[in-house]
Image 1 (cartoon, one colour):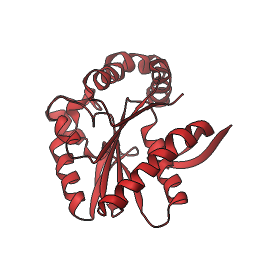
Image 2 (cartoon, rainbow, N blue to C red):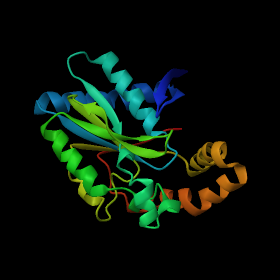
Image 3 (tube, rainbow, N blue to C red):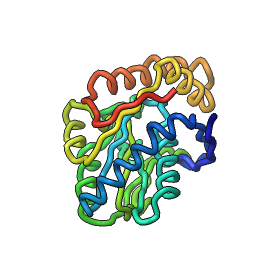
Length: 228
């Protein structure tokens, strides 16, 4: 049996479909874990959810936010992505990295670290990535909740400077998805904008390399699970 929710993911309505077994044995225990962590700490906790491109991190993080808010009324929960920390297209052009957009070196990692540290101490605005203009947009989401879930590909990388991010997180989670499923999803997603053949080429030249980077450089998360 599956549960389906319609969620607004980066400005698009997406059907989030999860097996009841995963909800009961993976997701609810995760939420209970974070609820208890907050109750013990009595101050904001920052959680990192990492996974490969195409894993459905954004959708899952929003689903977890929705589920948490339905289960717990005395603690607040927000999810936010790291994509708002992409360098601007102009900056990528200047660095000659525009064709590598989405790869580890196209993010302002130190800015992300600063925001995480700031968020531990106070409420603040975060940038988001607009799928409409394909640029980061500053001061778009106000972070004010007790539990903040950050999702992103490289949050658990042990390579510098990404390894500094993991040190700032109170808890870490990694989600595995079969590589063939990732390939199918990523090509299908990219085909909508550039066509199937170019999408396949983009996968080989970019997405597949980013997948390998995530898997080859990640440190072990506190919690790891597989979603089918």
